[in-house]
Amino acid sequence: MEIKSFNHKGLKALHAAGKAKNVKGVPADLVKKLHLQLSAIEAAPSIHALATMPLWSVHELTPKFPGKWSLWVTGNYRLTFRLNGDGTVGEVDLEDYH
Image 1: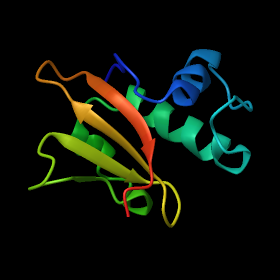
Image 2 (image 1 turned 90 degrees about the vertical axis):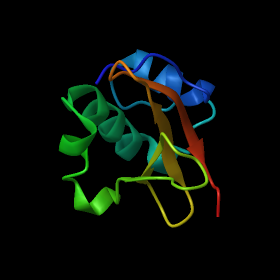
Image 3 (image 1 turned 45 degrees about the vertical axis):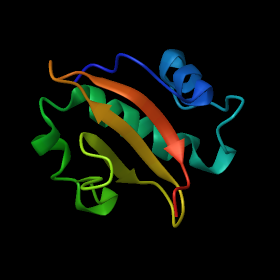
Image 4 (image 1 turned 135 degrees about the vertical axis):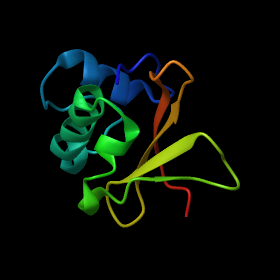
């Protein structure tokens, strides 16, 4: 699934770098995991393929935020994104919504 847009500038910079490296706005201890998750999103042919990663607890944030998905990063942090109608991904963000 192609990533079209980011809400988080640090994640955008990490994705643009094409490798796991420290960037402003992304906690250094999360860089490798977030890079892996962004790469997995890009490589996945569908949300169902991505959901086969049980350690990331991939799930839709319904009923409060339909169309918005979440991947577990740490105890509090989640990588969130919106799945667009054309199968692309947008509004990628790093959130602590707990």
